[in-house]
Structure formats: structure tokens, C-alpha cells
Length: 328
Ligand code: ACO
Image (cartoon, rainbow, N blue to C red; front, side, top):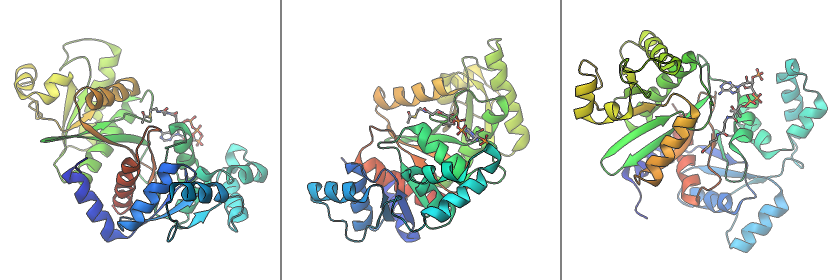
């Protein structure tokens, strides 16, 4: 498959940063192959985390050398006690005992997140065998929220040959409050600009355009739009819009003539996770967009999740994005 120019650009920026990314799903064959590719192409340095014997057996079976790729087995690591003590301290108010913390640190996801927290790695990428919930919980509990951020969320880069979007939130917050929705919009806009260089044009999506329907679900999007505008008046952001009014200039100009968006949005904020998750998969599966993500945003340091159906390329691409996001 031909690589998209944006991905090539992201990888080449990542190379210059020389970051170190841990792969807590290290026993997965795709993670082993991705680690090799990242190191061979000098995109990032990688460490595989997991049962050492299993990782070595699989790499032998795959005929993939582990030269230059450290393997850390949490159960054998000399850091395991120090990590457990620190985790017990962080989660003391939640009733976590040292014994609970020792068990948690046996899990590659939690161990990897602790390496990131302590600066022993710059970021982590998992999800090829772990569930989204487990990956996110390790990030939330060990790394924690970035300053000024109230909610961890995610976005996908949705790439067409001549058009590029960020869709959010498609993977994390099931039913955001209007305050959370406003924050998701502002965070996604900032990251869209950082990753693509494009000026964000944010549309807050609904089944109503500018009051065409009355319903509490519409009011939620209206309140989120108002709050986001108040928090960041310079941002090009508006709502509420039906999808067509957000992305088709003719429809946008007719349904919302006075809006700054004019049917030309490049950041789409979905009202909840049902809409966001279905929306990105429809665009990917039926409209043929390349979906890159989910890119987790809002943690102090980047800990990313992938779909369990991901490919080796997906892991490599997301590791490169992880390196870039951590540098921002
Ligand atoms: N932002 C900020 N903080 C959060 C968030 C969030 N989005 N979610 C939970 N927290 C907080 C909790 O309040 C808790 O705080 P506390 O420790 O101070 O009490 C802490 O983080 C840890 O939370 P947990 O209770 O361990 O996790 P929780 O049960 O709330 O689950 C999760 C969070 C995993 C993100 C959940 O919302 C979830 O499962 N979301 C859906 C994920 C999913 O299945 N997506 C599917 C699609 S993925 C795809 O298609 C690619």
C-alpha cells in the first residue's frame, strides 16, 4: 500500500526526535514486527514489555531479530518494587494497598505506564491485544491528566486523498457532559493544528442545525458550543450542525448562512461515543477514508490505544504520532 504523504511527514518528524516508546502488548506478533520496523527505520526506539520467554519464542518463530530492542518482563524487573510503592502512594486515597499495587505492576500496561510517568520512556502504544478500557485505565491511573485538562478523550485523523479531518471523540468518553464536550472540541482543535499544520475549523455536530430541532440532546451541543466559544473566542468553531451543513459548502451556506464554518469544517465533534464511533467507522468502511488512531489526548504524557484489529503499519504509524505528541 502507498503511504499517505501526511504519515510520511509525521514519521520523518518523529525520526528527528529520537523518542523511546514502550509496547506493553509485547507478546503480540504484530508488536514484535512493529518494534523491529520502528528501530530499523529509526522512527523511534522501542522496548517490548511482557513475558520474556514468550516474546523471544515468538520473535524466533517470526524470524525477527530482537537486536537493539530491549525486552522487559515486569515480573523479573529490578524496578518492580519501586514502581509498586509509587503506585500504592499515588492511589492511596482510592484504597489501593501495596499488595494491590504489586499485582498491578505485574501487568505490562501498568508497568509501561509507570515507565512513561517516570521518564524511562517517552510514550506507550498498546491495544493490539489489550482492550481500550484496560489501556485507558492504566494511562488514567498511572500517568494522569495533563495540566488544565478535565477529560481524556481521543480523535482519529480521517484522511481522504484531497481532504483531511479530525473526528472526536470516537473511543473514550461514552456520554460527555456539555463541559466535557467543549473541552474535547478545544483539545482536538489544538491537536489537529499540531499534527496537520491546518487551521482548525470546528463543527459541533447534532441532528439539528442552528435550532432546527428542539430536544435536550440538541441543547447539550448548543451549550457546549457556547462554552467552547467563550473559552477560546479566536478559534473558528460553531454549531450545532447536522453533518451535511458542516462539510458540504452549499448545504452549510443555505442552512447556516451566517456561520464561520460555511460547510467547510475539518474538525468534527460528535455529541457522544455512539455517534463518534459509528461515524468514524462509516467514513472508514463505506467512504474509504484512511483512519489513523485513536489518538488519545489529555494525558500528561502520551499513552495510546489501538484497535485489536490493527496492523503492523498501524502500530508503527501511531508510535510515530506518539513521539510527536509527546514533544508538543
Ligand atoms: N477523562 C478523565 N478522567 C477520567 C476519564 C476521562 N475520560 N475516565 C475516567 N476518568 C477518571 C475516573 O473518574 C477515575 O478517577 P479517580 O481515580 O480519581 O476516581 C480514574 O480516571 C480511573 O478511572 P476508572 O474508574 O479506573 O475507569 P472508568 O471505569 O471510569 O473507565 C474508561 C474509563 C475506560 C475510559 C471508560 O470510560 C471506557 O471504557 N470508555 C469506553 C472505551 C471503549 O470501550 N471504547 C470502544 C471503542 S475503541 C475503538 O473503536 C477504537
